[in-house]
Image 1 (cartoon, rainbow, N blue to C red):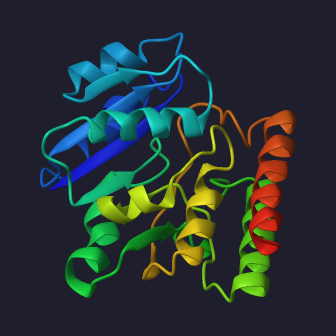
Image 2 (cartoon, rainbow, N blue to C red):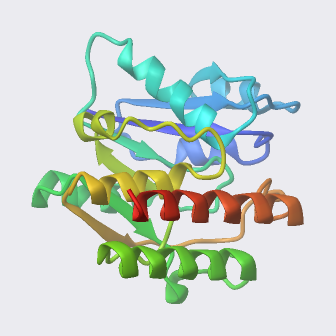
Amino acid sequence: MIKVIIPAFNEADSIAAVIKEIPQTVDEIIVVNNNSSDDTVINAKKAGATVLTENRRGYGYACLKGMDYVAKQSNHPDIIVFIDGDYSDYPEELTKIVAPIIHEGKDFVVGARVKKLREEGSMTPQQVFGNWLATTLMKLFFSATFTDLGPFRAIRYDKLLTLEMEDKTYGWTVEMQLKALKKKLAYTEVPVHYKRRIGVSKVSGTVKGSIFAGMKILGWIFKYSFK
């Protein structure tokens, strides 16, 4: 069983397209409305998703809300997939993301936004640099092989619970990767396509967002490096 969690803040123009292109092999699509002021909720419901609301603004808050919902269900999934609601990823590539878990015994898979598969301008210079810096530090401190902090990712549900995720905002993705390294999860990356998002990024699209995201990411890396 596979469930998908999509954090969404003002993604009315893109959320339906994301939902509709997720493969039908998925058992439930959970959109977490993160205090949107547009028609994100209406459009997500029309597209067939389960919609939750988390009024505390923050990517991590939204992801944790989705996890809490899943935890309270009687039947838990085998795999949880996280994907953004801005349509920058290709939802149909979910089959590629989960394949190493299903067929190769991996615990955790990150969709790597490799340069040759990225649409020009789909990642800002600060995103490219931030990913390079974070993954370089993870390689230095933990001998990791990650090349990206891509938000399109899949993880075994039972392994996700062992990570005890806690970040509420920008550090969610790097926290997951660092804890996966600490827990010695079997991980890999899968190259994925990436395109210009619909709308303006709430993180990399602003100077403030980029600075806070960078601080969060570095904070998590150095916290775990010296534990």
